Length: 102
Image 1 (cartoon, rainbow, N blue to C red):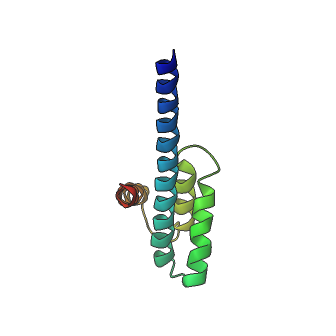
Image 2: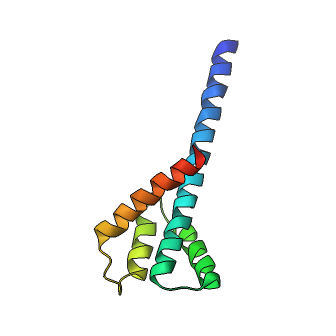
């Protein structure tokens, strides 16, 4: 029974670690997305910092990435950026964020 308990704790630790890593990658990706959109919108450093925080906070509205996608799409509506381009940028920056932690 002791081995079973040790194994259970090990799986729980791995799960917690994996979830923490997903959160960090998602937050970093959102930071990169905020920087990308800020450049398109020609924000200064202060406004860029505020915008990055707003993108990170948008991710807490619901599970998944659709909340962030909708925010960025709305913010870029006057800049002729397609949905596919936004989604591709999200994928690209997610991979960049993963590489920061791995």
